[in-house]
Image (cartoon, rainbow, N blue to C red):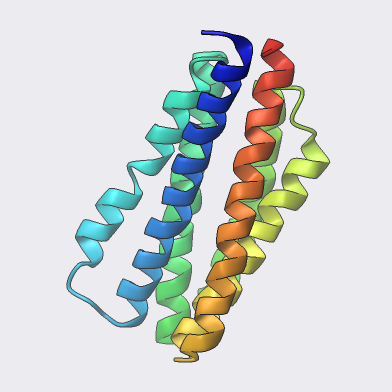
Length: 178
């Protein structure tokens, strides 16, 4: 397989896993907000996503570094679920969970940079913070039953997921000279 085909295949795989990340997150936000009976099953499927992402990264990077990114992605999703639940229930823990979510994103930006120096820490942190901001906007609209705003917010999340996937693809291509 030539370099162009390898890079195109990587780009496609990376976009798929990051789009799955936001699609399954959205489904969980809806399940939590609407108190649906599929919450446990949706959560279980969503929590497969960090492993799917790690399976791509491990082809190119050190397993220990990839495992840390996988761990932080899993934590990211767990915090998100707890935060949406806290916001839905009006819990006083929401502010602390929100703070922890951004701390997790900063830790993930550091882990990404350690895994691949082509991932600039500041750019990665900004990208991850934008992902959190957009996801919170989506969840807030859903919780407020502002469905049109919810859908519009998710459209922004979806576009950002593609941008994130492409950034990860470019970093791998640069690191591996694809």
